[in-house]
Image 1 (cartoon, rainbow, N blue to C red):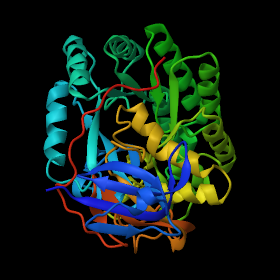
Image 2: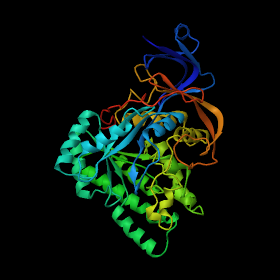
Image 3: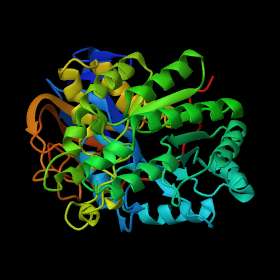
Image 4: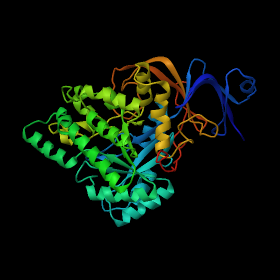
Length: 467
């Protein structure tokens, strides 16, 4: 039985085009586009018609950096794959790429199997996995080749968190050399964790225990230094590099320099660095703990350099690094010692709306909004053109977006499983109205009509930007 849906009268926006067009969906895929009102479009018949007059019709968002159920600091991220993917759908995101974790002393396969088990049958939208490599050895390197063949084509390493996820320069170089051969992409958390640990110890010894000191010890210069070092190691290995959650002006400058030299180096930032700052970390009564994440929030003056990087394409992707911990009982673990506050912010539901607000504010264009939130992450991680665009043959992951709707962000109304909003009280213009995932309605005129288990695991090809 074939099922057909027509979306009529909207402004279809992709990374490359804006056109008033009707969209025909058949059996979960985009079948055709035709200019609204033309005989071709008028001839379409379907079981379901969605009126998008006055609305945007955009590809579902691709959030390439989430951490559902991540174990961290003696606790777990508060969103499960079920609650987190449902919240993502509410925010207009239809694909996430989460991180499976290799535990030191165990194989990559064990980590991947564990994360597959967590997600299987639970997700409201489609999902894939990157692999966190915590233990580089001869066996791990062989496994990387096998994972690339299976569609896990990106590997994350950490220059931070000694004793947990940390890799030294030799381990990083070996993994990069392997990815240069197998086509994988190394994703780097670029902060000098060894130096940061010294500064943490010294701050605590001085009695500097409040959340704001988290930002002060994780210095922008140590993000820049690690970014520079990661770029040079990648250059030695002849490997591509993707730097996650870039937050500081100095780190953007390192990426820009490398890209000017023609290197396959890419950068991601997150909404928290574009909209929040150290002012939030300094909020009194331990409220600042809500904003503890790594890399940390920076002083406001860094924001203009991040926006500029997004406009000049020195930064290519905005992901969330969604890793929520409740204020009560989780963030509170760090009362009296900022180093014990679980690192992470909720945001998977807010990204598309915040970036639309950036369009309203004049930071980026509408097409750039779709590029950094949908098309580029899909291309970067081997999901395009199945995901990230509205074109014949693509999955029918489509969002009807009301650009004029006003909303106030709040924990009272969000759907993430966390007891606070990082953007509490922020007014934004624009809101998701209806969301389709592979042609099925997940959000219908601001009602959740999806189900756990609709979302399927999606293997990925390799990065589509490598020259």
